[in-house]
Amino acid sequence: MKAPICEVCLKTDDILCPADEKKLQEGVISELDVKIARLLYKLLGDADIEFKRAVEAGDLIVIMVGEGDVPLTIGKGGKNIKLLMRELGKRIRVIEGREIKGTDDVKKLATDLFYPASIFGVNVVYKPNGGQYYKVLVLQRDKNKLPEKPEVLENILTQITGKDAKITFI
Ligand SMILES: [Zn+2]
Image 1 (cartoon, rainbow, N blue to C red):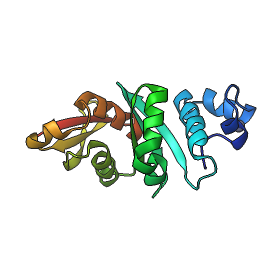
Image 2: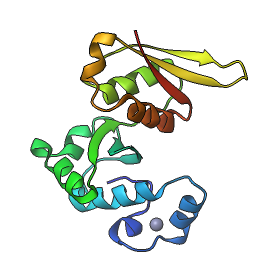
Image 3: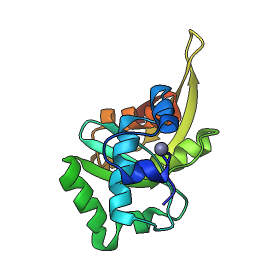
């Protein structure tokens, strides 16, 4: 398993090696990344998957993995997800982590995250003070299909993209 911490750190449960401790201090990785990496390692061991990062909001944890790695991470019949939910006491979503270069990438990300609701479109909105945010358009009729509260999904999108995200129902 590929992870943002080294194999030695994956195998231990308490301390981090100096290199990974530095990453944590500098904010390159979070406490949550460390926790999830270790739990996934326990479940998946040497499986050929990549864990990229995890973010949480409300009672949801979103786990981002490499391309094509979602089924293995979830496990047969969702068994890994069930174990993680029990261990963490939160709801879990596993999606492919991708680099965010533009609205197309945000749309793909939101499509994974908002399923079964669908995304009508994503626009970049320029704020008067110079900042920007992503406006994610969802059809009014899909409102009840969102898997989480809109605020939770907005928070997750903001953390992943590094830019404010707002859902607008049209
Ligand atoms: Zn390490």
